[in-house]
Image (cartoon, rainbow, N blue to C red; front, side, top):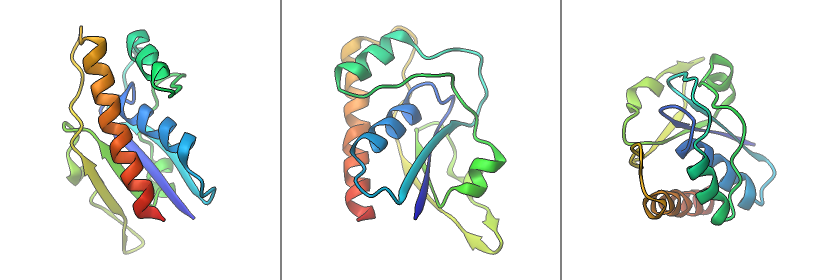
Length: 137
């Protein structure tokens, strides 16, 4: 079994899309996925981003969640789905076992991004998740 934790800055978009898409296409039920953000925010998901994801067949919903100690203990692989989250935050040992950290430098969206730009970012994430699942086997 492999537990995957997708991480971005706030868990409002990039890590959410990666988690939802992974769960949608993952055929190996021994692989589990969750997501979280390194910063806890009060903002809900952006309706424009939710709509763009739905247009591409990915359903994201719920409130953003933080990366917690429980999630860090649970995960086997951390996938940073962001260009603004430092990898060193996840370079730690749990019982002398270094867990794997992968970085996908997916750019953050800025306020007022176009639907086309949002879809472009989602497609980047889809491409990375497809490749990642292929590597997991």
